[in-house]
Length: 209
Image: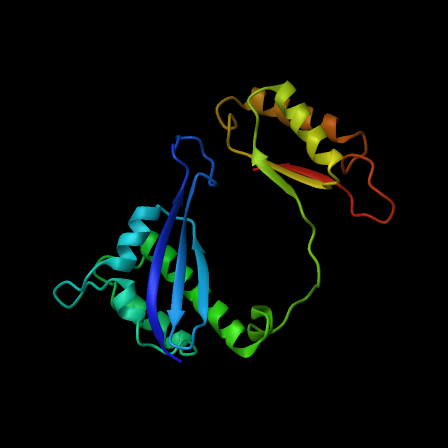
């Protein structure tokens, strides 16, 4: 099996704001092979910078775009591919977006190997320690106590036993931060771990990040 192409696909909303909301844009890496198996990776970086890192042409033998580095390789040579990407981007990489995109390509390669072997990737990586994980709600912290109360009540009514709030107005006024967290804790319920949990269920938790 050989890699035949690497595509960097930018996803973005029509308008981007300065709000710290990571759902406004994204970069998808698609790695294709000559056996019709396609792998996908996801990169949380500056999408168009990441796209340029994939598509750049070779410059004076020291700067390679990652597509040129990867195409022609056997995806099962994943360690060699990683080392090649590391070596051929040293002039402009080794940090930031280059590492982000290298990781997205690596993710897509593991996706290919899983599909080719008919096994979940966690089996190829050595197995898993659990067959289920606890789901939690994640959102930007609202900028008012009423907004916090409404959001917590909405998530807990859906059955979430954990909620993560972050960014938004947090970090500018420690006293206001404390008030927002207190409001969230109160809206979640009076128990130390949050609202009253369903029988046999894990204790709810709230945390601000």
